[in-house]
Image 1 (cartoon, rainbow, N blue to C red):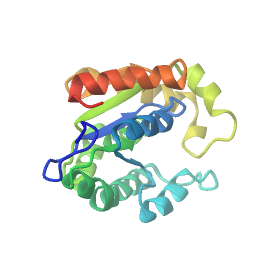
Image 2 (cartoon, helix red, strand yellow):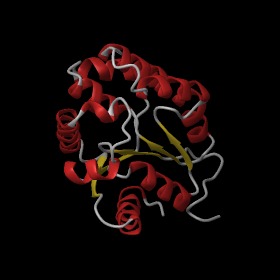
Image 3 (cartoon, one colour):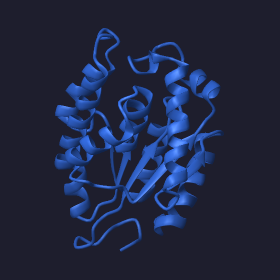
Length: 210
């Protein structure tokens, strides 16, 4: 059995991609999941329930959605996601690669929306049963480049503008500096293959996978 396949009695590793909108998370999460033969998922929207929540939270037709409502909906999505997808896969010995997890709420709702990191963290600890990723890969792309990648067809959160994007980017860097054992910052500029190779090198170094 190769390193890319896990014994049934060994718990899998949980790897999360974080970063601002337009940084390439979804693409790189898919690349890594394929490389590791891992379960690929995302937040919000990694379950049927989550897909309904995602549609509501990101719908630009609901600008009146309150910040606390947004945070609660994200936590609800995450609670279902952990229960239905992440925890069963890890327990069965599969690695899980997720496009976003708790740190997204800390950055977007805790800092960006001004709700407070501690309050949002406590909410999400309850929702996830205090599940913590083994590795968080922060894809770092400058705000102008990220904006160019997004284009003009923006969802409700993407349309919030550069002020929110700047707060989120700074927040992520702060989290990574506070927890360097769990976070790894990867340059998100360059071709898909170049970035994927950087990610793979970090995952190999930190977790011995690849």
